[in-house]
Image 1 (cartoon, one colour):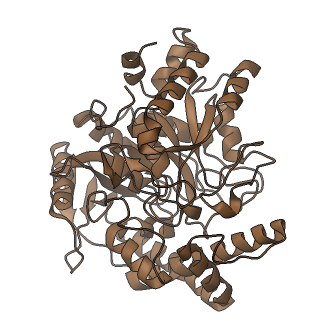
Image 2 (cartoon, helix red, strand yellow; image 1 turned 90 degrees about the horizontal axis):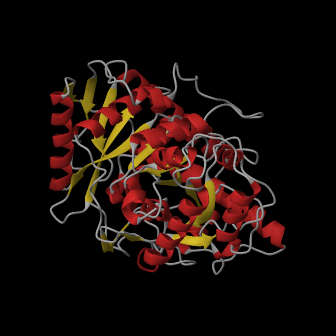
Image 3 (tube, one colour; image 1 turned 30 degrees about the vertical axis):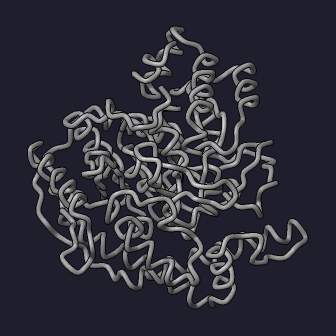
Length: 476
């Protein structure tokens, strides 16, 4: 298979070629490895290479799944592959080797995906760019001076540069949607608990975090959700099951929808290119027969920022304490990055009352958004307040957590609320800035209605295709 043929297919398309024996899993893996070696020195997306393990996986025999033979990358955060390192982007975990698979990884393997490495993540996924001290920054293939986003920046950069058609990603405050927006990809954050977090955890960040992927096509994201979603033994809760498959949702256009266009009218600074792009998406939705009107949900953003800070800090503190106990050492400022250590200290000092209040604030926001969406099918908004920032513009060296969170929310103030409410939300690549940097449009549905979100995203993809748009740095 030559370069052109590989580029012509998404993950489902490659799997179909394997099924028809027009290409082998070995050939696809070799292609993905060659592309990694060709461009990764420029973008720094793949930080752990499991080439031998991937070849052994194929030699052992792959199961018959929806993605049999398709190369795949895991994010270097949370998901575990037995016998391989997961560093969480941190030197404190640089020697951690998993002794078991995550439930999600088992489902990837059952789907026939061939895992050949892990992608760069900021330390513990705590920021919206990907510049860990351990591995250095991941760069945006559209412009190497700019960030690929975060925290799934390595995954997005790898897919956007043509190494592979989709890659594992996770989202605790926007970390699937943000890099998808920055790199011109599809980034779906499913409904809370749609995909499993076991066997080690029942939920992440009090239900705010979830894993899925970034992808070239909507249908790949839908089919992967079919392959990986569903209750696992011991899960504390699960959303309702879809009426049909998520892939089926890509094949039918939604009926006329009522869409709330959310562009804040207060002092929130939003780049004019972003506003123009979102309004163009609104116009496209209207052209497709949907009704769009400007409307704003009114959650307490200040309270939500406080809540997410408490919840994440408490979880960071616990993770570091557990790692220190396993190593027989102490958590000190020299073993983690500055903001990580500040969160660790804050997490130790927050009270049980404060944590309980933080979860209550999240639940109250769910009620506010739930009531708002009694009048709308979807919300359309930006993913980010401006196009992708330059490398170094947002890092984890801020002197205190409050200042750091303020910097984050001034750039990515639209995404986190849907982690706190648990609603499904997707970034679709429908715009570009004047400087040729991608701008994603974010669509958000009611809790549990991933199908509708996927259906409209697929309709938009057909109306305004993006598959042929390639960045400056491309592995072909």
